[in-house]
Length: 223
Image (tube, rainbow, N blue to C red; front, side, top):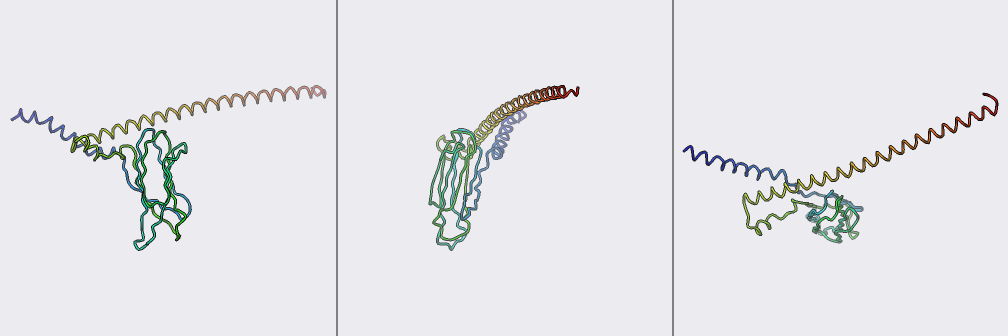
């Protein structure tokens, strides 16, 4: 009896560990929630997110009809640009749409929405935007069907993806910190050289002023 309990203890501990990892991966995964944007009758509403290189981005958007008896649904235009200003997505006169891409450069990716000019009545329009990046954009149902995994194994795969995403994000932050430190050190060096040059110019100007005053006083026989 004691031997059976001793052999079951590691199995029970492993099951508790798996259950804990399966529950805690929800805290590690980026939360993907839809946001509502209020588009003015004139002007543009934009959202941006800083994303590193080689990250999958998936987004869905649609116009929300807040007035049920309205027979006219507003249409919107959408444009997504990269940090360098390249157009990644552009669509006009739509009530809903979807865009997906893999980032090729690090920086702020900008998504802008505005109402089309054919809107007949004034007022504002609400747009729902579901923006997902990285591990949150992964289609786990397709992965489970393709690799024939389910249950705890699927949860562990999600946990592995979340840990990998966190590791890549830490490496990205480390790179950004190194770049910022390099820029800061370069700026400090330039400021130090500028201060030394300014001090040298002040000393030279002061010496020239003293020399000029000395000659002036001697010329006037004041000294």
